[in-house]
Structures are given as structure tokens and as C-alpha cells.
Amino acid sequence: MKKQLVALCLGFMTIGLYAQKDELKNAEKAIKGGDFKTAQTIIESLDAMEETMDEKYKAQYYFLKGQTYGTRDVKKAAEAYNKLITYENQIGKKKYTKEAEPKLNDLLQFVSKKAINFYNEEKDYKNAAENFYLTYQLSPKDTSFLYNAAVSASLAKDYEKSLGYYKKLQELGYTGIATEFYAVNKASGEVENLGNKANRDTMVKLGQYSNPTNKVTESKKADIIKNIAYIYVNEGKTEEAMVALQEARKNDPKDLNLLLNEAQLYIKLEKMDKFAALMQEAIRLDPNNPTLFFNLGVVNQNEKKIDEALEYYKKAIELKPDYVDAYMNLAVAILSGEQSIVDEMNNNLSNNKKYNELEKQQKDLYKKALPFLEKADELNRSEETVKSLLNIYDILEYTDKADALRVVYKKMRE
Image (tube, rainbow, N blue to C red; front, top):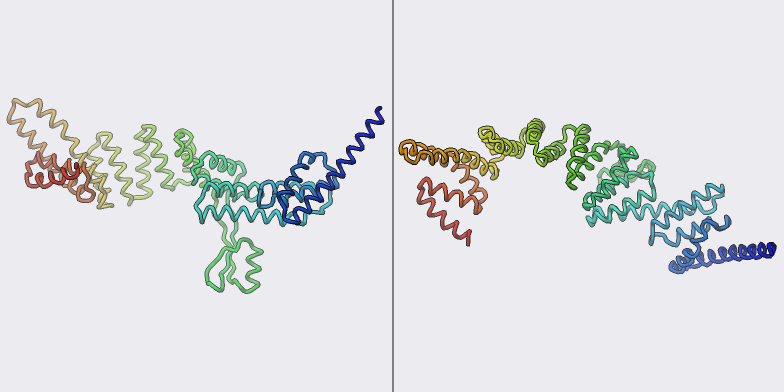
């Protein structure tokens, strides 16, 4: 009985080998005829036999599988070609590798071009990210594709994927430093990046290009840390963002955007002293930036340091004469002194002399704030500016101005 069973098993194995051979022939025939649907059906029926497939047919199976999927399923096709190359290296017999390698490179170029088109032409960053990452999977040594995938995913607001890609780049020690090969196009006179040295040198030899030059790109290490920080900021992960931003600033201490993002986090954490310190540092980096002075004005105003706030707002206006918010905040800061006057007036209702003195102080305060409020209204009229002006005109008894503005206010309210 045992011998009979062995014989039966051997019979099944023989049938299996013949079936594999015939199926691969049929798949090859379908591919040559352009019938990829039939070829795929055959290949899928053989997938379960991959591990036990006879050595004589395994390389052919991988090669045909790569052809079957091709650009219709780049990932499966590339996986098949890579398995083929690895397998033939192992057995020391390269029957299909020479044909597979250029096909694999064609797939790489196909996906890479798709990714670049999605990114540059269609601005479809989601698909750009997917195709850049697929290109990296097809050729893991080309880590620049992983960097492009990270950038694209971030632009698509897929922060989880982008963060994963950036962290992978850090693990790989990616710097992005590379040599670019340029030459002058004789027909157009423009300097062009010709991809690689061999291609550039060939073009120069053919006489189509001249003046070959090389350029070494800058490291992207600091950018990666910076982008990780920005992702944490966008996700509202304050503590992680703070750690990442501080790390990024160590690499690039003069980057104003990094500094401002860190400062913004201190606002969320209600650490206004640290915010103010960073704003002072920002002004040293960019002394002609009106927004920085405006922000310092806001910080000091919130801390009741009105004199300091006024100076910062005035500096912002000096740098940017049409800075509406600075004019408005100047007026508000000046009028912040009104409450104490009003409180004292209420305490002196029976003291006419003192009350009149205080009333004059109040009106002087309005007169001091009025030019800044009028300028804000002139630059950008709104219901708020008109209402504020109306109140002051009424208090100061500027009847003509108040009556003219009341008509405007009524129309705005309607």
C-alpha cells in the first residue's frame, strides 16, 4: 500500500510539473497576443504554487508575471521582476535578468513621471505622494523619492503619512546632498540639468550642449526636522511641536519662520514672557518687519504696559504707514486709560471741580486717540471703526462730523 501511495504521489507531482509548463506557455502566448486579462488569470492560478514551483519554471514565472502586470499594476510587476533578479542571482543562472532589468527601469520611469506630473502640472499632491512613494518602493536606494513623497503628503494635508516618511528619512540618515550635472543648451542658450554625468557628457560630445558644470545641492537635514515640527504644529500637538521646533532651531538658528512658530506655541501655552523674548530675538533677525513690532505691542498691551505698547505700535506704523491694525490698537491702547478716569469721576459726582477736571482728562484722552482711529477708518472703513468714531464725536461734541457719519452708519447697519 505504501509503494502504491508513493507512486500515486509521484504521478501527481508529474502532472503538476506538466501543468506548470503548459500554463506558462499559455501565459506567454497570451502576453504576445496582447491578451493580458487571460495572462493574468493564468498567472494568478500559479501564484499558490510559487513556493513549491520547480526551478526550471520559477524564473520564467516571475518574468511572465512582471510582463503581465506591467504598467497596469506597477507594484506587482516590479515585485515580480525584483524576485526574478534575486532568484537568478541565487541559482547563478541569469536567463531572464537581462530582459527584466530594463523593464524594471521602464516601470520606475513610468511611475516617476506620473508623480512629477501630478505634482507640477495637476497640483494633485495626494496622487503625487502615492506615486513618489511607490517609486521609492521600486528603488529603495533612491531616497530622494521618499523625500518627495513626504513633501507631497504634507501639501495634501495627509500629515500622518508625511510624518512617517520624514521619520523614515531620519532613520536612513538622508541628507539630500547630491551632485547635479549642468550644461548650456546651444539651441536655447539656457543652462539645463541633464540628470546624470554620463548623459551630460554624451550631450556635450554630440555638440548639442557646452560648458559642462557640476553643482552640489545643500543638505535637507534641517528641512526635515523643520517640517516634522510644522506637522506637529498643524496637528495641534504642542509639546511634540515644541521639542521638534527647538531641535530645528539648533540646526538653523536664523530661520525666522521657525522662531515665529515657536513663539506662537508659547502663546498657546500662555507663556507670554517667553513669547516676548522670542519676538525681541526675531526683531534682531529682521529689524524692518512691522508685524514683529505689532506683536510686541499686543504682548505689552495685554500686560498693561501701555507706554511700551504705544512705542511698538508707532514703530510698526513707521515701517508700514498703512498698517490698519496698528492704528486701531494704538487708539485702543490710549483709551485703555479711560476706565480709571471714569471710576474716579463716579467717586466725585458731588465734587463739581474735581469732576470737571476728570471730564477734561477724559476728553483729552479721546482727542489723543482720535487721529489714529480716523486713520484706521480711512484705510479700511468698517462698522466697528464708524461706531467708535461716532461715540467719540458725540462725546467731544463734534456735531457736524457726528451727523455726517451717522448717515453712513445707518446705511451700514441696513
